[in-house]
Image (cartoon, rainbow, N blue to C red; front, side):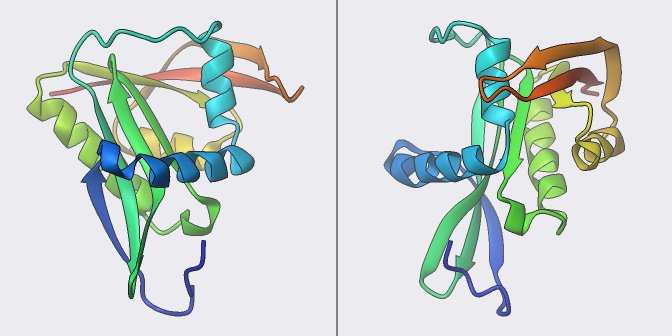
Length: 163
């Protein structure tokens, strides 16, 4: 990313479109160097088999804009009721995750979802704090997981009822 962090940056959310695929693929590749989120999904789900969506789904991109530069710096989705989010490290801690989650939950309510869920690493306290703030509650036991990179982690399932 080539943003000047000493200058103002404007953030917005937009629904991911195919014409932006190259930009959000680059975002995912960068996120994969910063977080295990995408490794966890591949291990948890086992074989990579195209999944058929059982209901409404959305992917939102968090766009950072500065001058002529406009790039996705975060991504959030809901598919089959599962919430997933990731934001580049340099943009974390500024409330952007809360904005992204709020937009996802608003969308879930609009399309009539009655519950959403997610798996979060037990040691990812900032993410757990955000999810709890939005009413997610832990369910079940911690699930141990060994990632392809050899790192061991534990996942905590969290659920939220949509009013």
